[in-house]
Image (cartoon, rainbow over all chains, first blue to last red; front, side, top):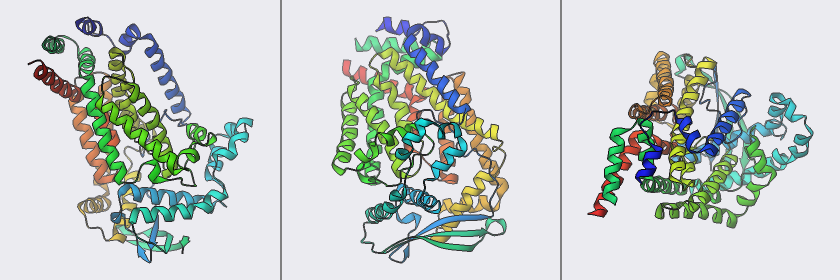
Length: 192
Length: 301
């Protein structure tokens, strides 16, 4: 035990990577490769798990004068955030948002357009063309979504929900953010 | 033998540099560290169960959220989501393996086979969950902290645990640098946009909680919102100091708790998985090692 402690320790102060290189060269080169790929993907702003980009709300945005939300009505009653678990709420709202985005894009996956605009080199490559069908959601995915959504609503509320309506509402923000005025309301999902 | 180990451990702590101390403490505390880590994971799993977050509970969302991330594309090409989430029995087996491997890793901390199984399945779980839930959440605390436990050689484990610490520091430093680079640290656009949406939802649902009152105050007094935003950014940036010294880890623990409180009150985000990365900071390791030493002493006497 003492031998090991002496080896890993030592009085002389050394930098972490120097110590790793001396004691475990394989690990050292693994770390260098990891840092290299992390730097490359950061530079081209491409997230390839496990090389994450930790932006954390860093994009510079201007305060909008309108706000869009999705209101979910179950058997005619409004589903509120406090009615269900935080994660359940997140899953319902984010998947609804994705459903709406694809629905508004003629049921074509919005990611398709994003890849074409951001990485045309990848998009027009032969490899991408051959796998594109497998990595994008199609119209059948959009058609199947309401069933899955209904199943989640029943699971989260533990109630026999027969009627579901999801409305996309756009509000104008009033002075000092203290009031909101409804501008438009559109039914994007209706399940009987 | 246990007494000698404990005495030697104490001697090393007094004699060597903070980095050496960190590595030594990590090495000696390993079995207890593994137990603490997996007990926390199991508690998180209980939370997952009641929040319906296991793959068998989420089910196969027909609209998979792959975004521009080739790793998710690969899963879709291999039809992994359909194979696991699309079949209830396979999904239940998948979740069971995840839980059982965590239980074994907790019960038997001297081996790493179950940890390897856990890591592979949790990595798959993480990606599948993001595909099915409609958003790429960066709840990577379990992955980052579990990685070193896959290695049975003590020396490699200690180095990798230090790497997990550096990665934890990188997450926050990187977030602050992105804000500085994009010029959003001194711009209230992000925070006001988030608060607007929260206020609208709260107004509709008749929410009068303390959190709502804080949001309301910040929305009306935008200068305070900006100050809160800058403080959060400064807290993120403070993690850079950890790259140069282990001496200030105590401050980083406090800063992380402050950041988490702010994140909960203002943005409404708390990633319980990411709390586990606190384990990689020196004061927590020292604390665990102290308990470990006491346990060794109790066993020998």
